[in-house]
Length: 74
Image: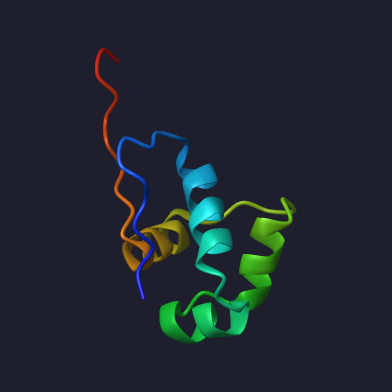
């Protein structure tokens, strides 16, 4: 199952990851099993208690089909 972001949806990577996780409705245990990201890390990230290391954010972005794009004019 992959999260397909809405077209032309632009937001910071952290917000996009949080939205993808929340909108997927998947239990943290299943995300842990499918991505290798510890559910404790996911819970703390979603609660705003911690940020994610870049390698972990990358795993989640790939899993949910998210891409980082450069803004025009910046």
